[in-house]
Length: 210
Image 1 (tube, rainbow, N blue to C red):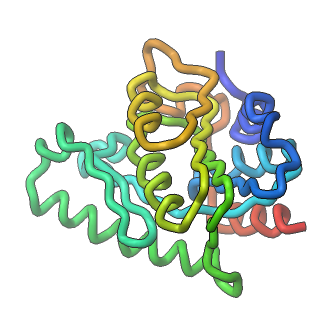
Image 2 (spheres, one colour; image 1 turned 60 degrees about the vertical axis):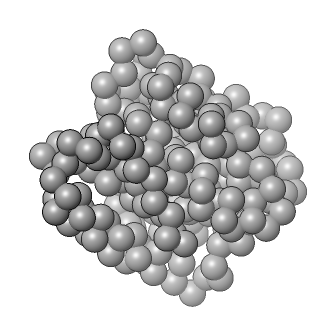
């Protein structure tokens, strides 16, 4: 089984989230950038607003798809000790500096001319394209809580059982309908899995506000 693309995965995921359809206090937040097309489809199906939450995976330098942690706005950091311990301190610090700078750039790009994200008293429905280690989702949960969310739900079309369990320890609810026994990487479960551009994220946000 594979999803055609992120949008199709979001449409399928929305079926698992039908209980949130039309709720006035729900905000769908796509984890930038890969989660945005999934989140846009979810928001459209549920009839609720869409916004973006910027988190950055801290990738192992020689294998960037493997995360040793993640960073989010408001100074949030999530580190996976068993992976981070294998990295030279200087290499880990360089990755952290780069990703913090990139996070700030993207925050400026996506929130230009828009008010800061305010989740006070709302249900934050955090959507990504997959949960491999869960580090990015855990960072997103921490950001959402810091921004005042009353309830934090993480949703992804596919994820490893370990990641779902890890995120489940932080979020109020995790919705992940497909948890293959042999996971590997998120890209394995999509027929189309190209990079999502800044322009595509901006276009999805504009459409989500209409």
